[in-house]
Image (cartoon, rainbow, N blue to C red; front, side):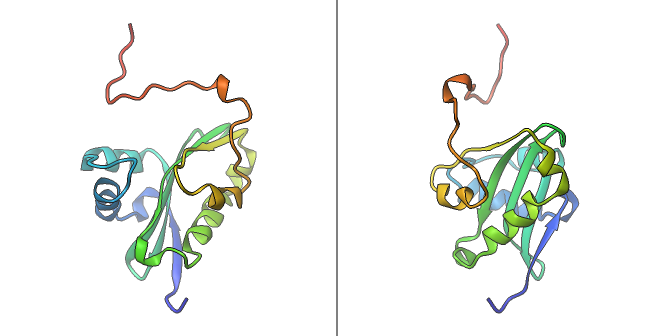
Length: 142
């Protein structure tokens, strides 16, 4: 690849407008998400982005307590930059943070990138019957 890719970590380094545009217009998992939700999710997560110059071409974030658990989410590389190793470079630096190695569990969900995540030792749930979820925009306690 001729263009120099840099990986930047931290919410303050992310182009929130670019991330929102991708998530709300392109992604299958966050279509039509509003800007404030994206902005808040970035502010409350550990984030990394792949940049060529000042253009953000990739993104990944983890919801985490930095001690025991992380949920990796919103991973993407712009289509015109996919297949060039940028996603692997971004994930290698992101997951290579020292504190990631101390976590007891790191999880994610994917519809179509299993082979990428297997390169980073992700595997199917060993006991899927133990996990539950709520799929809703509103969580209410009865």
